[in-house]
Image 1: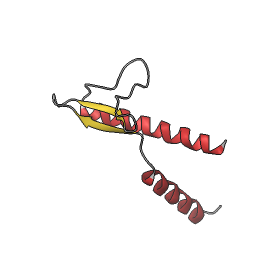
Image 2: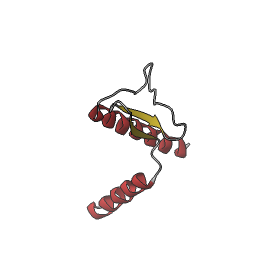
Image 3: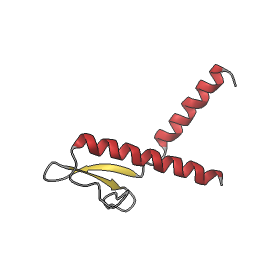
Image 4: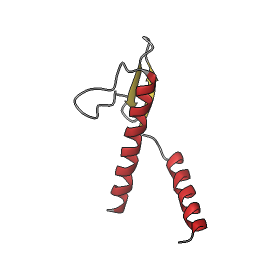
Length: 81
């Protein structure tokens, strides 16, 4: 694979990732805190023993991005099996 082919593949992969459904999103609550939630169930994300609720916006965005990346990687691995 040459540099141009590699760049084209990276762009196509990035386009596919942005067009795929993100599992997690952000919701601002009435008290102006933020919640990371599962768009399929509508419930707060719970990656471990605690729910991602009552967060500052910056933290919520970081957690949301991490969860979406982990979910995308899980889907790719699942598709390869």
